[in-house]
Length: 406
Image 1 (cartoon, rainbow, N blue to C red):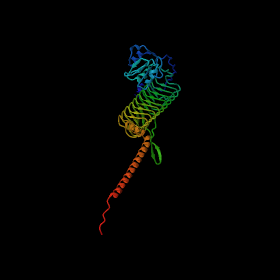
Image 2 (image 1 turned 45 degrees about the horizontal axis):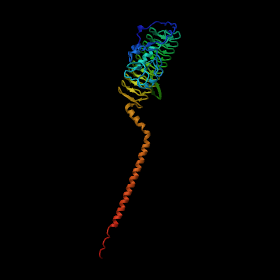
Image 3 (image 1 turned 90 degrees about the vertical axis):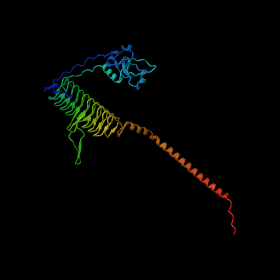
Image 4 (image 1 turned 120 degrees about the horizontal axis):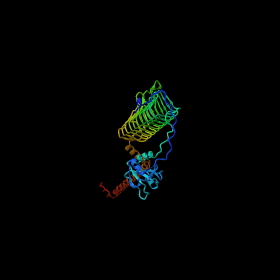
């Protein structure tokens, strides 16, 4: 949510915080497999392994003694034989391969997500290199800052900006005039928020992203392309993450909107007046033209391109490199350029794999036809010869006609 003005410090100056010392370096947290099972809500296959000590978590091809790993599906099953991990996260249906070392197992519903949670449990908290407002940060006097805001050196905060509690602005980031950021937002180095951009709570903007730049709007008039003023805004919902070097344009007259929970990868372009639904996944190098709309839980795979003024229904999945030029219905799964249903695309692709063999197959067919035609012609000629021969023989066997008396 956007910070309430009552929670913001409204003074005309901002106290410069002294640099804080880094957190003391500590050994990695350690725990037993039984303690980890309690933290993750998992079930030990063998309760006697509850005392197995763990000091870290790594993928199965890297994990060694004292470390946790996970197995999700059959892809990495061949690595089980050489696995040196102290314990492994598996799903309840997992059956270990025969003839391999018995590794203590912790059953969970989703091994991948449980492993991600375990990695955070073992990770040492990063040192706080700085907290507060650095003396080399540029903060407008009219900016209003919530509690525990951190602004790193070289960051720029414009006039009338509002920052919620616990916001972190990293070095070189620019938050221009009249922007509003909710609590717990993080703006990474050299990201730029153009004037009037609004972010909800817990939004993460990665390095080099540009939010709220002018949309690509021009009108051809009297032989020239004249710029249409881009007077709208950009509103980003709660829990959105925006990848490195992604650009999201402001609206022309209304707002461009990004729904809560949406995750946007690196190098994505979202055009003006577009409305992205909640909890979308937008992968790298996606390009979305202006005035598009997506429903909730839409997936746009890598390098997807959307033409302007189209609507993608909720829960639709657009496959990698698809070119979408028409509306897509909810729950549809499409791929290809132009995008078509994936079942149809797979059938066409399967047929295309047979195309290289067609010339040889056609050549064989024509050769067989030639042979059949030649054989048929030879048989016809032979039959005609036989008929003619039979006719001649019959004429020789006929008795001579009797001569008539004069």
